[in-house]
Image (spheres, helix red, strand yellow):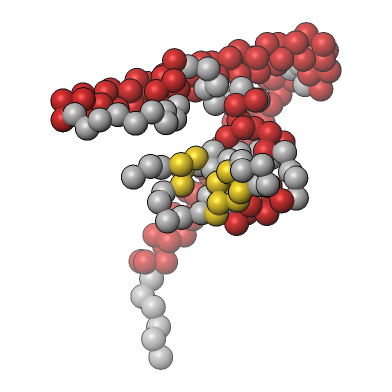
Length: 182
């Protein structure tokens, strides 16, 4: 059982799935779904469509060069069945998959780090360029204005406490008087 790659988007094609197109010069193109086949017939460039693997590799979003990709290359040399070779191959496939996932995670983390540093440097650059606008927008509190604001806050708190005390006194007076229920 061989799992092929889509010519257009590089996703895997399992046996019995997808579309196969054979050109006049006997070149075989395999597509995972009709979407890829249609785009191929419309002569779209997979490197310009954001959802394809080719786009991600050309833009540096996916790992493009790695020695572990050499193991995925197709080999059309027939090999005589050997149980030991089969067992070693299966074990090696597991090890290679682990190595690939570790490298992919490391690559993504490095991309995030670079992007964060780039954003921070751009932010610092903008602050240096337009920092005077930020200072002009925020008025500086003078000492007398700050004391006025503080005095107003304390007056509001006192008024609120006085109103609360009056409400409690009115409620207490209301409980003491008997209520008419006629």
